[in-house]
Length: 461
Ligand SMILES: Cc1cc2nc3c(=O)[nH]c(=O)nc-3n(C[C@H](O)[C@H](O)[C@H](O)COP(=O)(O)OP(=O)(O)OC[C@H]3O[C@@H](n4cnc5c(N)ncnc54)[C@H](O)[C@@H]3O)c2cc1C
Image 1 (cartoon, rainbow, N blue to C red):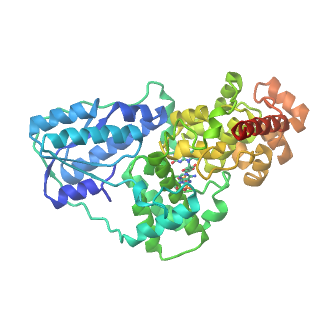
Image 2 (cartoon, helix red, strand yellow):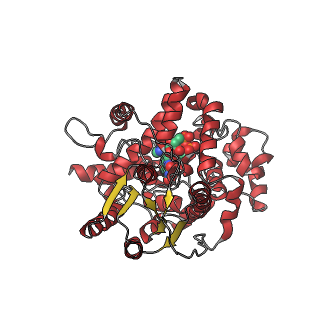
Image 3 (cartoon, rainbow, N blue to C red):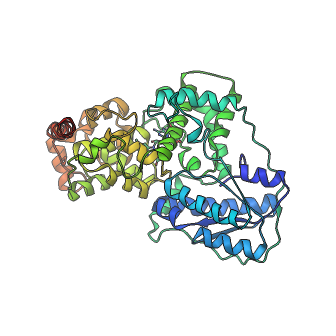
C-alpha cells in the first residue's frame, strides 16, 4: 500500500513496462482481516488510489473475489506478458500464490515476486545447523547485520507507464456493517503519507526515550506505527534507513530496532512453525486443560473483570482499535493464566479488534504470553495486574482515562484495587459503574500452576 520502497513498482519502472495495477481482496485475505482492519483497508486503498492517479495517472483497480480467476480474466483480455507482486508468508497465501505462479508459468507468462515486507526473508537467516532460530537474541544478532551488509538502497519511483484499458470502476466498500469503526478517525490517519510523517516525527521527538518510556501506557510514547507496517504503507527497511541517517546510537535506538526484529522473528515462526495460529510450538500445551467459561470470557472482552488495568486496556482496544504492548501482555496473561481460557480465544478477539492485526505478530504474541511459543515467557511467569499497574501506570493516569468513574478514590492504591475501599466500590456497583473482581487472583494463580504441572508430568510419564 505504498509507493516509496515498493520493489514491484521499481521493477516496472526499470523495465518500462506498461502497467495495469490491481488490488484483489481474495477470500484468504478477507478471512485473515478482522473487522477493525477492514476499516483501515478501505481507507488506505482510497488514499493509494488517489496517489497512483496523481503521481502516475494510473487507475488502481480494486476488486473482491478469487485472485486466480480475476488474474486470468485480465491476462486474457489485455494479453499480459508479466505479472508481479510483493510476497506474503502465511501457509495459505504461499499455497495460493505458488499455485497461481505455476499456472501462469505454464502459459509462458513471466512471474516475478519481491520482498517488500521484511528486512530479511525467513529463509535468509539460519543457524549453523541450517535451521531457523527458535530463540530471539541469536536470531537478531544474525539477522540485523545481515540486512546491513546488503547495503540496501531503494529506488525513487518517478514514472510508471499506465496501460490503456477500458475497465469500469465500481465503488468499492469493504467496511463492516456495524459502524463502531467511525471513532477510529479520531485516532488514526491511514495511508503512506501519514506513515512517513509519523515516523519522521517519532524519530525527532521520542525515539531517544524509547527504552525508559516504552513500557508505560500512561506516557504513551511508542511509535504507533504498527498498523502502517501491517498494511505495508511503510517498509521496515525505510524505518531502519531513516534511523541509520540519524547517525546516533544509544540504548533506546537499539531497543527500538530490536522490536522491529521481533516482528521479523514472528514472520520466521509464521513461515516455519507448523501452523502458528492454531498449533502451540511447545507441543505439550496441546494437552493443557483449558477452561470453557463464557461468562468470564465475555467479562474480559467487555472490560468488566473488576481489575481496573485489565478493564481499561480492553476499553482502549475497543475504542482505539489498538492496545499498548505492555497491556497486551497483561490482558493476555490474565486470560490464559488467571481465567485459564485458551489463547486461541484471545488471539481471535484481537484479530477482530486490532487495526494492526498481523498474522505473524498476533499468534506469536499470544503463544509468547501463554508460554507455549518460541522463546516464550515461562508459563509460571503470571503477571499480577495490581503490581503491573503500580509499576507501569503509577499515578493511574491510563486507568482513569478509560475508567473516569474510578476517580472517586482519594488514594491511587484504591484505583488499582477498588475492593480495598468497599464503601466507595459498593456505591459504584449500585450505580452500575463498576464491578467486583470476577476471580480471586491468588487462587486462580495456583490453579494455573497446578494445571501446568499436570501437562509437564503427563509428558514425563
Ligand atoms: C498478545 C500480543 C498480541 C500482539 N499482536 C500484534 C499484532 O497483531 N500486530 C502487531 O503489529 N503487533 C502485535 N503485538 C506486538 C506489539 O504489541 C505491537 O507491535 C506494538 O504494541 C505496536 O505498537 P507500536 O507500533 O507503538 O510499537 P513500538 O513499540 O513503537 O515498536 C515499533 C514496531 O516494532 C514492532 N514490534 C514491537 N513490539 C513487537 C512485538 N512484541 N512483536 C512483534 N513486533 C513488535 C511493531 O511492528 C511495532 O510497530 C502483539 C503483542 C502481544 C503480546
